[in-house]
Length: 183
Image (cartoon, rainbow, N blue to C red; front, side, top):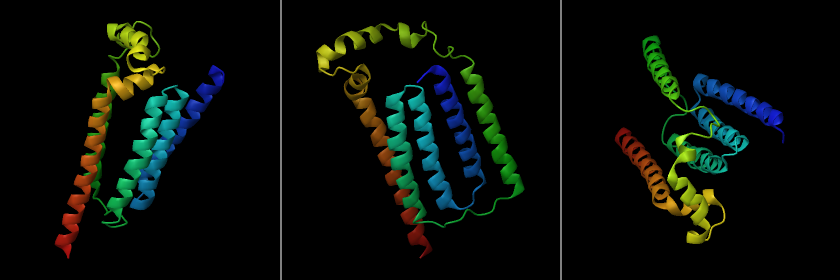
């Protein structure tokens, strides 16, 4: 695909992401919100694919759309189907916290290098050359991204999966305890 087509596709996907995010924020039916968060993750994975970040897209699709959606639906099986109504004051407080957090995140991006610059630290770090030159000889994996994720960063990836698994078990334990207390 040419660059103009990819930019148009990315713009459409980002628009769908914004619409889906707004729909999630307005929904009170928790099942529909859980399903839309899975759709949001799939749209995010599509954006990553359009940006040629296949490894990130795969992770987002499997963890975001897969595991997280299953955990949310499992948690919903133990709770109510609709969200409680919230007072206007709580809504204003949540909006303020969200706005401040968003502003801090936008401020943090101002220090980042511009997209695609060849002189960024990720492109000039000495370990980059080692990964690209030696990964096929050391681990016998021809794809540099796969060799970094599966071998060089294998313990890191295992740690991330362990954290997600532990969080999921924690949610189920907390929800199971609350359900037993209500009985």
